Length: 60
Ligand SMILES: [Zn+2]
Image 1: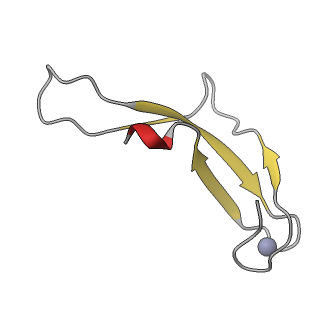
Image 2: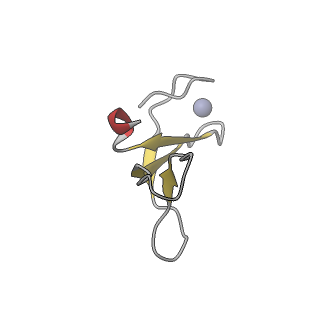
């Protein structure tokens, strides 16, 4: 993945949150099951920009 600021190749890194880091869709009622996805984290080692990418983004 290229950095959007300086076009350097970004490195995939781990997010240090216990149990991992996920996103979840908002639902209108408690009977709906929200969609969830893990999130990949990339850092640019030239300018420090951090980018997040959902692994299962097509569900949303
Ligand atoms: Zn950069």
